[in-house]
Each structure stands twice: as C-alpha cells, then as structure tokens.
Length: 110
Image 1 (tube, rainbow, N blue to C red):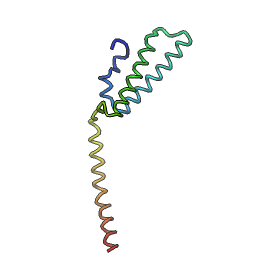
Image 2 (image 1 turned 180 degrees about the vertical axis):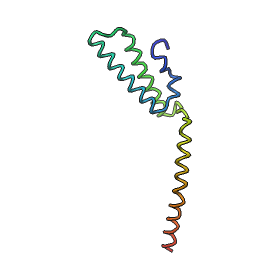
Image 3 (image 1 turned 60 degrees about the vertical axis):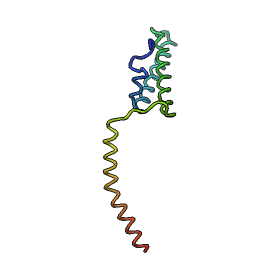
C-alpha cells in the first residue's frame, strides 16, 4: 500500500493482540485529531497524512471486526500458556480443598 503507515500494514496487524490493536487505534485517533487541528489552524504541512491516518484507523477496525466474526485468526500469544499453567496449578491446589469440602458435605447429609 503506497499510502499509510508502513508499520500498520494488514500483515503486521495480524500479529497484534487485542490490547495492542486498541492501543494502536487510540494512537491513530489522537494523531488524526492533532492533524485536523493543525489543518484548521493552517499549520498542516502534509495533507496526505490525514488520508493515511484515516486508512490506518479503518484497517484496524477491519481487523478487529474480522476477528469478532471469526474470519481472521487471533494470534497465539507465547506468554499466555505460561499464565494458563499458573492458573491451572492454582486451580489444582484449590480443587482438592473444594473437593474435600464437597465430600465432607455429602457425608454430613448421609
């Protein structure tokens, strides 16, 4: 794509997780606001940048929506399984306690 940010190509957006996409969207909206403000005051040097930022915003919205619909796959984070393991270990530690409590309740009822 000739116009737009080189770092916000569709291929690059595919690697971003949801939090980073929202963060990039906020940055792009802030930049668009600043560019519009500069345009209104006559300080804008590159009018093509307005168009490029608008396209970046549309590209981000498209990726988010396609992920919601299941058209585009979400990236697999490498850090997520480590967190999942911690949760499962914690859950395993808590599970016997809850199972023991459930067993104790069943014996009281019988």
